[in-house]
Amino acid sequence: MGPKLNTIEILILLLVASNIANAQFFDVTKNGANAQVDISQALLKTWTQACASKTRSEVYIPKGTYKLSQTNLKGPCNAPIVFNLQGMLLAPPVNSNFKGSDSWISFSNINYLTITGGGTFNGQGKTAWGHTCKNTEYCGSLPINVRLDFITNSVVQYVTSLDSKQFHVNVLGCRNVTFQHFKVSAPGNSINTDGIHIGRSTDIKVLNSVIQTGDDCISIGDGSKQIVVNQLTCGPGHGISIGSLGKYQNEQPVQGVPSKVRLSDISFTNIRGTTSSAIAGKLLCSKAYPCQNVKLANINLKYTGSQGSITSTCKNVKPSISGTQIPKPCLTTAA
Ligand SMILES: *[C@@H]1O[C@H](CO)[C@@H](O)[C@H](O)[C@H]1NC(C)=O
Image (cartoon, rainbow, N blue to C red; front, side, top):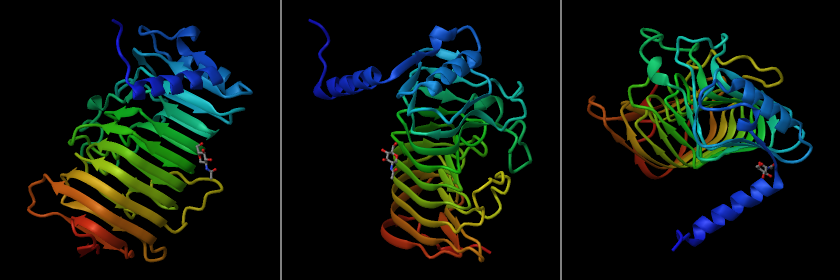
């Protein structure tokens, strides 16, 4: 008897099959990618072909482990594009050449991008943590696993960011991007590895996701609005942060995107997990630009640290609060 598939599996297969049937299909291994070589040239070539397609296209990276050096995948593309990562991409170790870039893989200026496939972006952060950043707070020069710059109407789903050297994902100047069934995985002692950092972006959703990392699970920097985080399992990690005055001042200036936009319309609902930081919620807004319409509902973060109790701290923000609240929000006011 052959293997039996349940209804869900058949549905998924049909969905995958119909996606593939509808899309122009570009396989990196047809352009020279294999497990023995750095695939950045093959990937760029494949991306360029797919991006030029006049109809929906798909960049396909099959199962397997592939070395990939610093790579920028740029739009605009002629049609919606799918980055179907089934395998694992392996970043170079920290001491190799990142060409002065603070990202490993960046996607930029793309409308209708889907990143999916069940695969993994492995940043090999173990080669970096506690190395380069010892005694410095901001490891701006270490590469971020995945940068999304000026991406619109897009989805990131069913992929994992593993062991990034710095932030796992940085969202900059984006609009209408949904992360769902997205996973971040790094140990609690990985330094400065925020899960998803969102800056100067509008209409970003993080849904049904798991973020295990050494710093904030989600951090929201200046100029962001309409941010929804729902059903997030966080931990290890340092909880959630909004605004973190000054922490992200290294965010590059962005042409056409005002940096001093008020942070507004931000909701964190159904957040559970653990935190090793005694301050599990940091809502730090500036006096000149207080945060508006911030909502916290059903937050339950169990403290695994050793400093007694945990708290959340607020500044220039009055969040609306409902449901479970552990820690109690805005228990302290930041100086
Ligand atoms: C947001 O992006 C999704 C995914 O591409 C798309 O289906 C949806 O129509 C977009 N929403 C708006 C308001 O453009």
